[in-house]
Picture 1 (cartoon, rainbow, N blue to C red):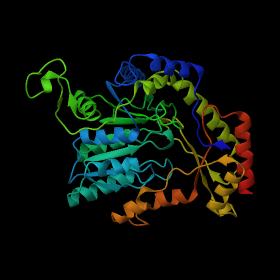
Picture 2 (cartoon, helix red, strand yellow; picture 1 turned 135 degrees about the vertical axis):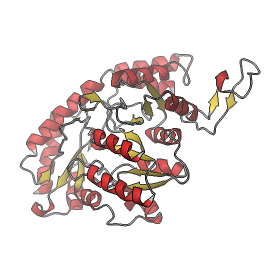
Picture 3 (cartoon, rainbow, N blue to C red; picture 1 turned 60 degrees about the vertical axis):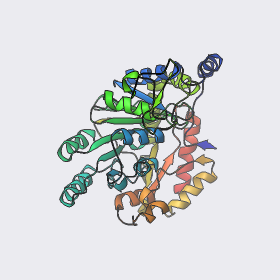
Picture 4 (cartoon, rainbow, N blue to C red; picture 1 turned 45 degrees about the horizontal axis):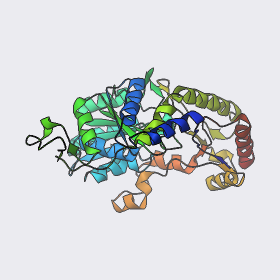
Length: 385
């Protein structure tokens, strides 16, 4: 089967991991700071905090920004559940903003309208999580403008977007946000097997997240309640978590970073071919905002149902039967049973629900061969016939 996503592990990657395995440190050694510095330097941000998953990064980002009981976090319904769950982990509540029908990211118009109502009702969000779906950045200048008007903090969930750019600058530089989060899951642009990272230009937020990722423990005497008992001494000064990334994972990440720009460029070439070959197909191809240079983690088409004599499910199943490992990103979070129990209802976010009824993610990864891509295209043509 041709999967929708796949990692590439080279001999250089393997040697990097072997070097870490042979070193004195499998965790809490020099590889993690090196990986953090490599990513921070590449995207142009002051601080990077590596953790064991993007979910963990979202959690400590929310905690660092002071999210808690009585607070509200807003995000898009078209995302993985972690973008919303991070609020619930903190004892806060969640609400959603419908998507833009062209970019599939959070709608600026819907966001502004909802903020006006929320201010009137005294229910403004403390944090807005802007998800860069498929690797295309949200309209961050507009979200930044609204944050200044309404006083909310911004987390960029850039789990899909490392290597992408917004207005000519790398995503992750936090020009418009307080914190940006990356994912290094195997199907993402680069991988550390599992892993994530939170980036910020704030010394305070970086220190908070570093503390929270490792049990809330410090060895910094300036943060202790009294002088150290000896060189072995540490203090737990907060309730933190074991969210650390290992040196083995970080060594893989450092090696993968050397190919990041190449990977994104290859994905753009594959997307260009998809766009050309699918031009006459009864599908809507991904639209790209002029301010964005997508990392193209995903290539999502939408079926033009009025021109197709099959259901969404039939087309999906036909492709799977042809050994094309298509997927659907994502099921609207507000339709999940857990969120339905929280009071969300079908019909609340119509653009997100319409997207879900039409979307299919085609295979896209840096090592996708021309032959395999041709197979995907022919199989899609057959499935749509």
